[in-house]
Image (cartoon, rainbow, N blue to C red; front, side, top):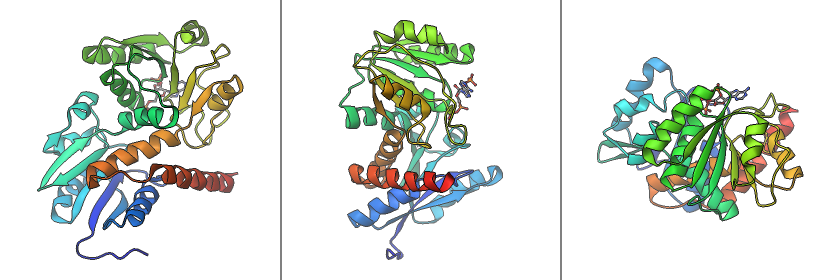
Length: 292
Ligand code: ATR
């Protein structure tokens, strides 16, 4: 048990529900290993208490927090400052508290992009992407791909109107997004010229693990396929794409890297990412064994 004292800096995770979160394990393990006097605590906050919770951070020894569903957009109104990328994305998942000022960041998109670099040595600049889904997670990822000068981002969504709206927003940042219908024919038509496919929908997540966001039969041997789901680690979508010969990245990539970037914002140091990958993978495997 680590020693907690009057100098211990606190980090909160504010959201609801939080029963599945891996962040306390990840951050507290890294703090202990690196000998940093910080403590990361999850708090399930009621909607009506959220404003008070954010204000209360200033009265305690908080260095910042993570914010998750349903507060990622709402938190913005309580901040003193907003990082440029977070402002354009319109959502915050990480807050720093320095000299009494709260500053918001979004490390979700950056975490995903960093997992591409870290696991597959892929730089988004000049690359072509197909992104499945156009919800909050998709928005953070496609905006970040646009900031990083991706060549083309096809956004394929079940509700086409939402793909169109997101593509319009992305094109205000950089003209690179094209909306698509979420169907196999549309996607296979573009696969030859695509470098990376990313599933950002929750289709295939536990307990509906038999579901798949799209059937893709045609691929090429340099295609990289990513899923941001990490429960299960290998979704049906990733398994089917791996069987066709594609390299894959599981949701652990984005999970660890968004956390690593938040950790760096709070402490100025990078946590040991390889070790955190193994820790999260082992913990998720144990959890999956307990589920079945
Ligand atoms: P998140 O914040 O996790 O991204 P969200 O904002 O609720 O979650 O977005 C969910 C995304 O998954 C949306 O793109 C949604 O498509 P719609 O806009 O058509 O609702 C997509 N999605 C959810 N269930 C789906 C399903 N069964 N098939 C295809 N797409 C689905």
